[in-house]
Picture 1 (cartoon, rainbow, N blue to C red):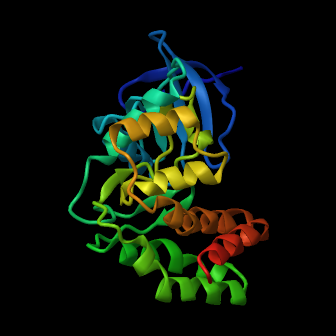
Picture 2: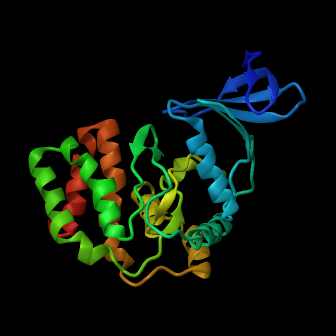
Amino acid sequence: MSAAADELPGGLGPVVWSTPLAGGDIAAVRRAELRDGRHVVVKETPYPADLEAEGLTALGAAGLTVPEVLGVGPHVLVLEHVQAEPDLHALGAELATAHQQTGEAFGWHRDNVIGPLPQANTPTRSFTEHFVRDRILPYVGDVPAELGRRLRRAADEVLADLLEHGQPPSLVHGDLWAGNILDDRVVIDPAVHHGDRELDLAMLDLFGGVPRPLAAGYEAVWPLDEGWERRRPALQLYHLLVHVRLFGAAYHGAVAARLARLGC
């Protein structure tokens, strides 16, 4: 625990004390006590903090349980410090409800970030066009040449027929894995946009699997469309490519494995 007297955005006043929180691979995160006795989470971001604040606010308005945004500075985000009772079934139901909030196009009204990386969000009527242009092609140069050729083949020959299933542009968290779920109940650190709702479940499955109670809660509100199992390897390519850029060659094999499942 360390003392701090820094002023926080949002008129929250000075910090009485603060201590680092676990995680924080991308941003420095600490729990802090304000002079009025409230406990908050202070996050110092390498990207504009209002991007994350906007995502949390959008997800909260759509029905997901998120920390309340208390203050936003250029690179500082102050959030409610939450402790929740675990309830994955309720989280699954809330996720399905949030996905029912749809936009007019795939993408978002502005570019934002996934982790520390830029995330392009040019509004597009076709999900495949959006996914290929903004989620796959920006990362082709990060993999070996042969793997890059296989990615381009998938983009040119496979994804359009595979990924289109009449899906609306759902509001998605965009970076949903176990590390971004607190207490099996509260979601944080979004890369929000309008996309295929199956993206969030595909990422959960990629890193640790979709918990059965969460899947049951989701299905009770909005069952997945037929054929989701065939689409999942393709949808997982985006987050794997993000991990290639962040962490390197250790993820090449996982990309290759998904492409093999697609016949590429």
